[in-house]
Image 1 (cartoon, rainbow, N blue to C red):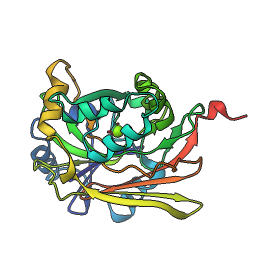
Image 2 (tube, rainbow, N blue to C red):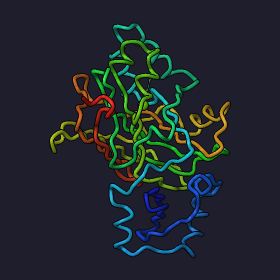
Image 3 (cartoon, helix red, strand yellow):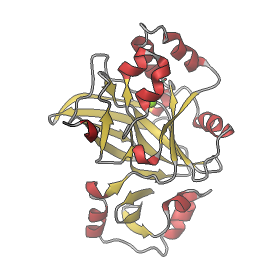
Image 4 (tube, rainbow, N blue to C red):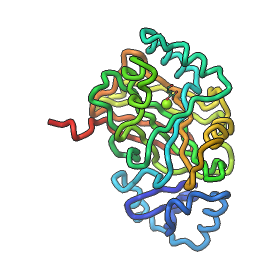
Length: 287
Ligand code: DO4
Ligand code: MG
């Protein structure tokens, strides 16, 4: 089942039927058995008509599925990410850092975004004005409750500046954290079953309506288990409202590729849906 955060309220989609859930987002999602709770809500919740459902789920009505949750990210969990980063950091001498962290017991985890820096489906994500080389990172994103239990999944885009990270690995926070540097959505897919290794992740990038890059892979290529990532994240941090964790990028466009303003980034993950974001500059930089 899918939970959508919208300008009209919270919509629960269960077997194609849409229900209104009239509860605060943070209390609603931070449950131990979110899926069973939502199934129980379908017995009494108000149903939307097909026309109402279309209005609630219009692209400009959808908000990111987040309120007081933090967004964290794991890095170098797929070989593709390790290899691309080793290449981009040759001249800075940091290549071995990525090699080591891929094999290390402790995973790389970093704070990615507060909710205010997150863009939802149909919204703009930004590239930095001072970055010459920019890519989206399509990432399966876990929703973990305050007790450290995975309750659902979303589609994440960990926007990254390869030029800034490649210049010096200590610039990672600037390469990763800035206004609208995280895409999340279109919904929170709630499931008590672990999402399987066969789950496909697809990335399409369109420029002027034409596909200029597309590739796909499956979650099975990840090096670490979700439980391992969650256990490191929760070992010394508390998350009163739960937390989102992007699990690392599995696809990296070729070295010569960089995003342009106006490009459309489309990330699809089986069962969850498709997150579409348009690339923009922070409007404060516009002349
Ligand atoms: O090591 C830097 C960040 C890695 C990352 O974001 C990823 O692998 O997805
Ligand atoms: Mg990433």
